[in-house]
Image: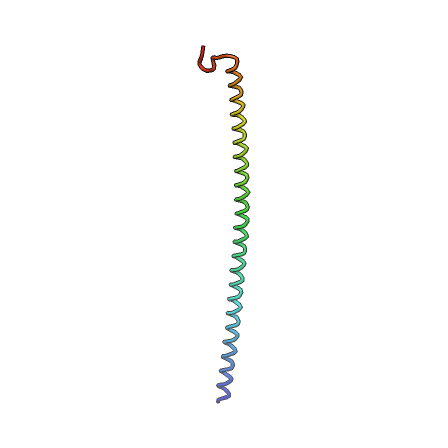
Length: 95
């Protein structure tokens, strides 16, 4: 009878060890899955940041080009005004 009880205890301990091993494996799989999801999210965030920086750089370059064009046009307009004012006094409202 004592031997039978030992055998049942041993089997129960083995089942418990097997069950614990399955749970440990499942926990490890979940941890690895979570790490992979975080890695993917981090990579997506890095890509989005790089795209945002590139868009910002393009916008800044477009703005600089626009400002340069405005400055150039302003200079051309000022030069035309000087040329028009140099030949006659009517441009300043004089007749």
